[in-house]
Image (cartoon, rainbow, N blue to C red; front, side):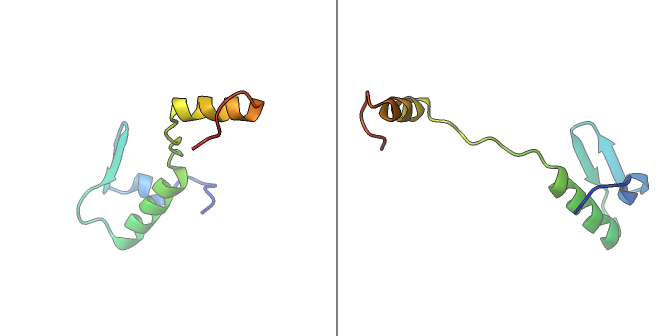
Length: 71
């Protein structure tokens, strides 16, 4: 979904724009729900992966040829 214009759900009486907690009120029409869900999915931040610092250090040392091989 390409976001190019202001989504229609924003002007819906079912939309609640609480900071950090956008949601729809019960009873929202299906088209509003679909658009809201598509927008939220398309604009969701990408979660960075967890980094095991010990494993990362081991990989760096292995690349340099000075440490043990990674697990």
